[in-house]
Image (cartoon, rainbow, N blue to C red; front, side):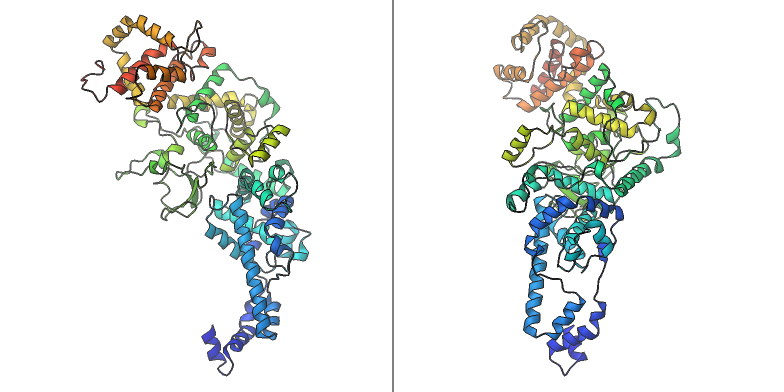
Length: 632
């Protein structure tokens, strides 16, 4: 441009030539450019307007240095006025504008970093790109201001106003979730509410943050108070995914358990996930409780065999994908891949022959981890980068530990996910809301005090009770309206029971080998001859001297220490064999006493003790010169 100005005006000094070139030619291109702000959906603007009280608090805190100062945006008239002044004043004005731009960009990046949006959802470069795109709009259009901040029209001349800040969140949600609708913005707000951002905000801006902001500040408005435009769009999108994408065979009548359930999914809004009284009050049979507990115990022990009490959001998402209720592949080109810290080496790569399990599919979900950087953003066709960067080859880099279970198709002749519904009826937004509502703790003064002292909320974990509540919500979302009264029982019959049947085939190699060994006559004779000694040994390490003595994990550890087994088998494989024996004994007795079967996951009775000894013997003597398993 300088050389062009020198050629155009050779008689003028170069600074004046550049200014003349701008005034007579380039100034016509300046004006109120709409850009990405004017392209935002009306429902998105309505949601931003509903969230204005919380967003305005954040804006006044992070953008306090540019919120009330004289840092004005240079519009067309401003540049023309600067041309008429001296070079010194024009340079000072441009420097002031550049400083205001830099401060605003840093403030937006700091806000997104505090609320864990950067780098968990988008990299820092993307946040800067969002700022530049939004900042291109010199003055936010009047129609956008009326929806986002109707009483902030007087601030439209400042560099980065509240309207710019609110619109930048909507653009960030589009970049993070590859969707321009309301669900992406709701997911971003939900993510911000679940982060530690409000705690950091109250600590960094004590003068701006209201009292109790560390607990009470919520970016996402209450579901019942959402604008009608937002509720209509959510309902329309849910109905479109439920009915518009289902094939014709989904409306067949009289489905059986082995057939695909083809009833259309209920067209419910995401904002109305409250359980209906009839469904919540319906009694759950004992067999259904047992099946739910089996499923819960299986997914709770994934990646942590000693855990049988809690589920994380990642494990809950894997459960829904195994059931075929949540899509495996994303609709758009961008997806999110969960990669737990310390398990970077557990990446499953497809073989050259192309035989890859369903675990290699890409997950559309978004899941939170307690460690920073537990999420990686991937994109098809690119290369894998560091945390928060845009990567590629998502199908080949899918983490099997939190994908869809393989279920050992060679043995079971059945692969996960199940084909209960022709099209997965749930979206990631609905799954996230179901998990949050099921794990929502009771708000008490003691809890508020503990949260403030700890500096933030604790990680949400799902227990058996909250898992059952979540299943009730899932059943209401998936089953037909006429099945609401017995929705959870019907859901257990059509989904949970077939899933447990597939998971039963995914037993460990030690268990399979031990079961085959127990069927041999010589092994049966050996166990019968040693039954008296085994009974005394079992009762010696039993937990309580009751009529029905049992072993727990401590009993197994004491037994291994006394007989010096830990020198050959570490505690983790030992506990895995104990859990497999407990689960097999519980499944074997499930048809009998249901009350005892409920404790089978945690306790080992004498009937399962020989199976545990056979697994231990195979594990210890595998490396020794034993020709047959019977010799071990």
